[in-house]
Length: 152
Image 1 (cartoon, one colour):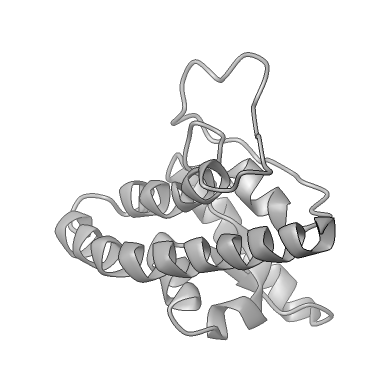
Image 2 (cartoon, helix red, strand yellow):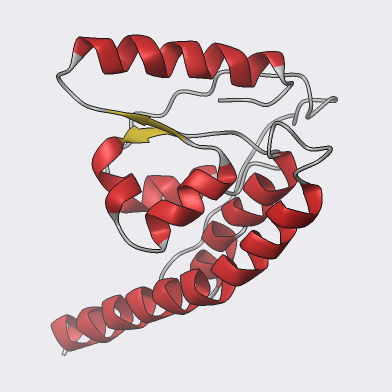
């Protein structure tokens, strides 16, 4: 019975995630079009993208995420945030932080329809694992993002 419950909750979680992605994408596209002239760092559209995590977590009956500690007094001061990223839920947890940050992510995710497009809209940074020139390019892009007062 417990296994059946876990399967139902897992299916529900993926359904919620897919629904959020499908709902968020056109909203993100419109927001990006509206803010492109003055939001070079894609702060607004990226922040909207990260709100998917808290929504999915809230709608999952088995998950309870919380953050502790003092939040930065100036969320526009850029930080480099590092996560050990052990599971899918790490992505949802880091989305609970109350400021926008761009994610450095494997390039393969950017090829996933809709989700990859959303990551591009948000200004996330692709890196091809095991390919040195891609890492150099990704680090240069991260430095540029930090100069735009957005965390990575």
